[in-house]
Length: 112
Length: 114
Image (cartoon, rainbow over all chains, first blue to last red; front, side, top):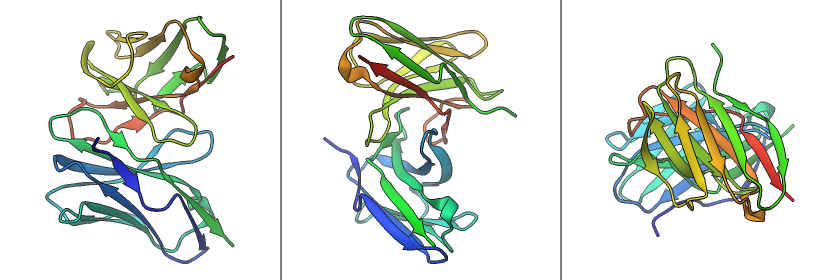
């Protein structure tokens, strides 16, 4: 069935570098996308979201890019810090649906 | 302001038992959603409630049920527990539960079935 998936299960970056986490989706009806960060033993924490009528949205040290043509979403983290180490999930939502559909997650490890 | 709170934080049950998990949404939020997160996977949608009415249901058996109270808190009930029900159960809230809004999660209840 249609699903949200991630390209890489793990990503290791050095402190201070930029990180890029990718996500592919297959549901053409998806019109809202959201990134969450989940630290060990905690619930998912909202990072940033974007609607399908936008290509790019920026937050503090984070940028989300949406390419609807190839159904691809990415999260860019600038100047990655040790506190950014966590599992990152993308999720999507249809305008007619109430559920957020999550991918499996990418584990980001920041090394000093 | 307090975030989404869930209780208990951990729970151990045996097969065949039932369990009740509780959730209090962020103050002012009228919608509560429940998700199941199996180890190594992303959360899977179970239910959404708004103003005490069920708005959406995921692909879960009838052993799973929920309700929402007038103060917008919610309970998730699971009957006839199976080993496969071992997971982190997450509650999320948002103001009106409409599509296209971020949902804010609690830290979950870790349920282990022996």
